[in-house]
Image (cartoon, rainbow, N blue to C red; front, side, top):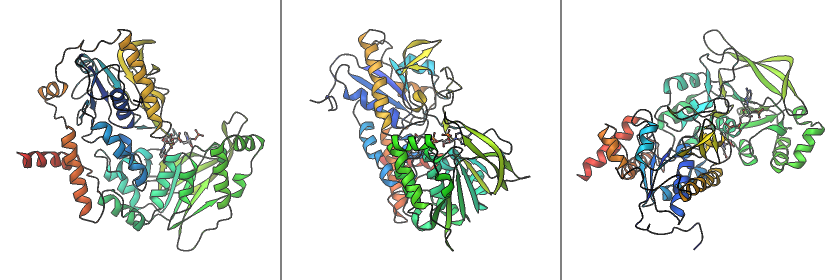
Length: 469
Ligand code: NAP
C-alpha cells in the first residue's frame, strides 16, 4: 500500500483528537494528511466559522474559473472521510476560545488563512469608490459577510476602473469586471451579482504594476485569459516591455517570466477597438493619491524606476488617470485570533515547520498550516505539501510523547459546543445547503447558484432537518 492510500479503519488505541480550525484547502489537506497516515488513529474535527466548507475555493477562486472550482469535488472526498467531521458555523473567539478548544482535543491545527486586505497607505484610500479586492471578491463569490451596499454603489458608476497590483487576484478582478453578461451567465454567482455586473458601465480597466513586467506575480495561463475576453481588448505599452540587462536575465532564467513576456509582446501592437472595452496593463506605475471630494474621481500615478535589487522608487513624474472605481489588489494578510500569537509584520503565526511558537518556543499541541503559516502565496495545491509538513511535525510530537492521544478526555466537541449555545452545521447540513444551491441554479438553467446570506444558508439546513423529521 502506498503512503497515499487510505489505511482503512483505525485500531482500538484511543484516537488522536485533532481540531483543525479553517475548512479551506489548507485545513482539508491537513485532515487528509492525518487520515492517510498509518501510525496513529485519528479523529478530526474540521471547524469553520462559515456553515460551508472549502474556504477560498468557494470564496476566492473566481466563479468564471469552473475547472479550478471543481477542485472542491476532490476536497469533498477528504471531508467525507469517516474519521473527519465538518463542524461549520462555529467561530473561535465567539463560540469557543482557543484555550477551551485546545483543552477539548489533543492537538489544534490552525488553518484559518489570511482573510484581511493589505492597505496602500496613500491619501484618499477611504473614498467611496475605493475597494479592496477582498471586498469585491467576497461579493462576487457570494460570501455571506460581503458588504453588498458598498460594492454595488461603487460598481453602479464604474466606467473607468483602476486595479492596483499585478498578481493573479488583480487579473481575476480585471477579468470579471471586463466580462460580458453572457460570459458570466453560466457561473454560480448570485443573481444580484450577475445583475450588478451586467449593469455596471465598465469601459476601461487599467491594471497597475509598480515594478516591471518581469516582476509581475501573475501566472501565464491567467494572463493569457485576458486576451480571450469576448468584449474587451488588452493593451500594453511597448515601451514598458523594453528590458534592461537585469530584466533580460530574469526573463531568461524564469520560464514563467519568459512566457508572460511573450504573451505581453503579442498584445503590444493592439489598439482600442470601437464598441469594445479595454484592459490596459501598465507597468512602472504606482498610485500616490486617490483623488476626489466626496467620491473617487481619479488616481494620481507616479512613474517608477526599478533598481538592481528589484526595488521600485518614484521618479516624481506623475499623471492622473480618471477613475470611478479603484480596486487595490496588493495582497492578503492574516488576522489575529484571540490568544494566538501573530507576527503583525508578516501577518502569519510564528511557527517552526508548522509548530506554533510562543515566546520563541514550540507550544505543545498547537500547529498551523496554509496561508496563516507561510503567508498568502502559492496555488491551492501548494497547501498539500504545506499541510503534510505540519502533520509530520504533529506526528513526530506524538512519537516523542509531547502530544498524547486521549490525554484530554473524550468529551464530544460538538456536544460541548451545543451546550455553550453554538449551532454547529455538520456535513449532512452542508449537503442540504449544497442541494439548495443546485436547486436554485436549476431554476435558471445553471449548475449551481451560491446562497449568499446567512439566513438562507441556515434556512436550507433547517428546512432539510424539518423534512427529515
Ligand atoms: P500577489 O501575487 O502577492 O500580488 C500582489 C501584487 O500587489 C504584486 O503585484 C505587488 O507588487 C503588488 N503590491 C503590493 N504592495 C503594493 C503597493 N503598495 N503598491 C502597488 N502595488 C503593490 O498576491 P495576490 O494577487 O493577492 O495573490 C495571492 C496568492 O493567491 C498568490 O499566490 C496567487 O498566485 C494566488 N492566486 C492564484 C490564482 C490562480 O491560480 N488563478 C488566482 C488568484 C490568486 P510587488 O511585487 O512590487 O510587491
